[in-house]
Length: 276
Image 1 (cartoon, one colour):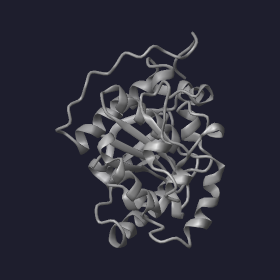
Image 2 (cartoon, helix red, strand yellow; image 1 turned 90 degrees about the vertical axis):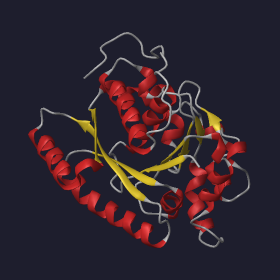
Image 3 (cartoon, rainbow, N blue to C red; image 1 turned 60 degrees about the horizontal axis):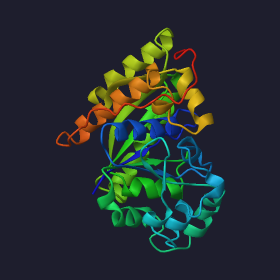
Image 4 (spheres, rainbow, N blue to C red; image 1 turned 180 degrees about the vertical axis):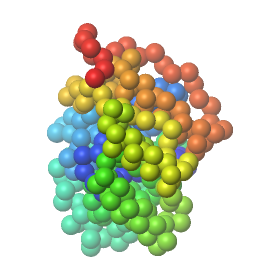
């Protein structure tokens, strides 16, 4: 089985999709076979990977209804180097349809098992709510990666998420665990962010990843071009931080995996200032 991780946080706007897309691109650059599963009806991970959600012949919606397989529905990120099981507005209606179906919380698990030999990592971009879609992701995952801003309200949301992980672990998926917390949009000039960061390390110890993703203009610009930030401007501080995070994740969860040297990727950005 591949290593399956949910990128989740019940608080919106904390960088889940940015983390999913750039972690996938970073893992691909060091030789890993990666699949992104977009479980958010907004389809931002799909579009941010350079896949047009409006023209998808098949999507994760049909996979959850068991009408097609992942092999039939996946698309290739043109510049990211990974596969995408895309989402669009149809997915918003899936929850209503899933309610009456058998194995409604395990359908994604079955679909991924059928494609298990094709990937080293599966990254699931979850919506910012505990829904049947999120539950499908948590039920099939080995762990949860939590991107979070170092702000006061983020700590409250983290408590809710940790409790959710414990409940799913106890009742639905004994393999599920908290893999780690990733500090994102970090600005060391802000005293509060430094204080919250220290609190995280005090309470969660080695569950806090060493990698820190800075607040970065290039990462924010990349989605509008349909390119992961890691590819859009490889020299930017944000891109380099995500590649470092990819290395750290592999060493943490799969130390025996052979890591290739990062592939040199030509920047997709136009000339200009790289970092904010």
